[in-house]
Image (cartoon, rainbow, N blue to C red; front, side, top):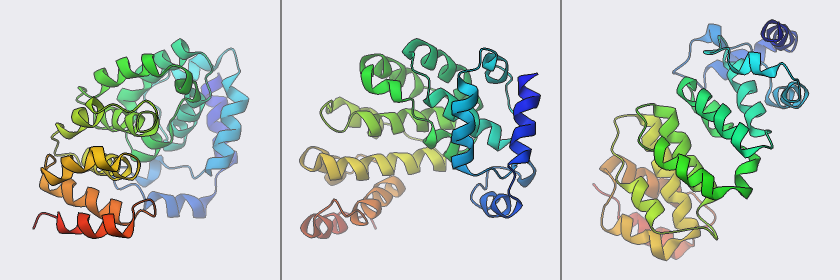
Length: 228
């Protein structure tokens, strides 16, 4: 059984001190779901197991018991070269993602060549009732659609999101801070016109001011736009 084989391999790579440190980074997870495998080791395993013909057994064995299994799953999907396979595996996995790291570190390289198909899925993910599915959608807009493929409709989709979830709101703030760094003149009106909720608005400004890609003059102006 490949799932049992993978779990055994993960425990062979366990680093207890790293597990103890790592557990403090994830308030949404219990310590006993952390094995403590470092990211470089997980990426190596993803390359090793990603090509296995029986890997589907592991990928469909959801939900996984351990955080490290989720991480490995995310890295395997990220390395998938077929867009349809990657999308199918991603859609099956996203509802089970339960932490920010698995969400944020999952980034299929094949999306760079198929942004049209990615956009279709992003619109679906943004409407999800799953915290990390929505967070992932915003992350994909930030990663793939703030440069040459940018369109004003994308930040408009993010700006209208209202959520009580910290990990969604933090990603919205991160998105707008990054968008200010890359598309300042176009994104600034979203801040000037206060199109985000108060917390997210102020957090976006904070993160933008911390960015080295924002000029000192821009930072001073943004500080004046904070909502008290």
